[in-house]
Length: 284
Image (tube, rainbow, N blue to C red; front, top):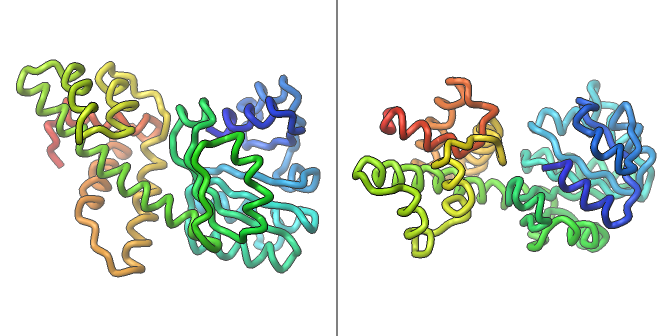
């Protein structure tokens, strides 16, 4: 997703300084004019706006605060810079980054996204933002090149909270359409035909429209990784616990996706859950 998003920024005339843990993954951007940096700190020091999209909250913490907690992007960025973390991460970490940025005269936003590889490709992502209004206003022209729905939800951390709410609906919804199509197949209906029918009614969803056809054709290439959804579910459960909310549906989704991860499907797309139903009949 990150490379697709970066391509939109280059196409709109933004000079881009990039870093990735695996340089090979940045080669396409370098051919289009992006400038390579060996460290996140070097890229940040050369930029007025820093955008990060990483895997885990621990990655975010290391990139922003450095390995020792006294370096990283926060220390390398110029006063007046704007830092935007688009990772799905911890709301409390987003708050910590915001406080540290403010102490250094830097603006920070947490701005996770929804829409998967399709949204990244089509610049139609949903962008959920937490932070100060002034920082949001600075970021909107960039966000408009990446997404169609851009919302400031309140102070730092609230973008992450909204994304975790989104992931609850995503994870439980994945279970719903996988179960529905598994029953359709068991009943000797054509699951592809059923998918087309029910997607036009009350059962319709983004996952049913975009991921179910991939699952039914045994295409489990990732738009969003199983291991990342497992991480997001755990973060969502932690947030729910903070507010005293019990989520039995999400607990089922967590158990299913952890089974998939342990079975070696961590790098597959989340639609691989249908394969689990198809081969295991939903036995947990």
